Amino acid sequence: MSTVNSASDVLAGLSSTTKPKDSSSTSSSSSSSSLGKNDFLQLLVTQLNNQNPLDPQDNSEFVAQLAQFSQVEGMENLNASVNTITSGFQSSQALQASSLVGRSVIAQTDKAVVDTSTGITGAVKLPEAGTETTVSVYDSAGAVVKKINLGAQEAGNVTFEWDGTDTNGTKLAAGTYTFKATATIDDTKTALSTYMPATVSSVTLGQDGGEMTLNLAGMGSVKLSQVQVIGQ
Image (tube, rainbow, N blue to C red; front, side):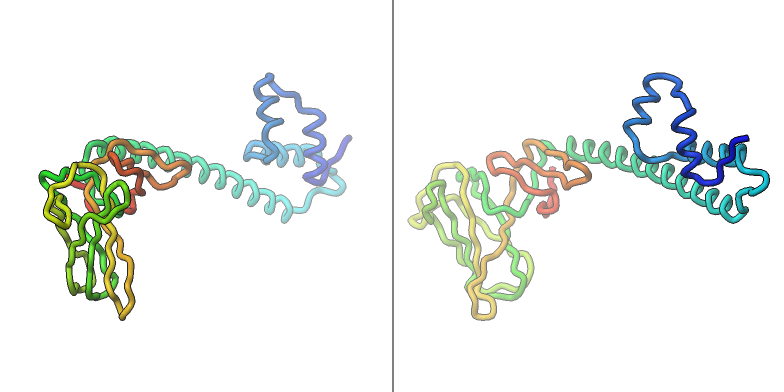
């Protein structure tokens, strides 16, 4: 009678005596180096069938193997649950993305497509109270066309308006303009974040659970976390 007492002996015996049912199971076995719960169960049953009756396996070792079997089964169930959650998250993200296309948003960006006939309203964010708060407007060539003086401001969001004119009051052409804000905080000139309105032209879904990216018409891309307000 052949006897087997260790898991390594059983595994060696299985690999030499067990025949695959078909080619698909062969490729599946060769592509995975880890043992599943069915493999552990087969190992355990084989050990029981082939143990030496004169030197049987210790009960504590069988209990330890049963605990390992439970752990493997629990990990497989956990992986299945995580895959289900991931699939649901991706579906939710796709639905959210489709609802954002064509919507107006206010996002953290220094650029905006401006219809100078109506002007534009934006905002700057002050981390602390400051003085000499200024928003400079730049054209596509990088030249300053207007400076908007907001004076002293408390910490928080501060709105500003630009009517689409230059320093001389001349109406400028519609297009993409850049807005850079500064304020004097604790006697130091500090750059501020600007929030400008835009229209979402398309959405790029995050890969492997990454953050969604909004592609703004004429303004490039921003992360969803950089969006302050989502409008109609």
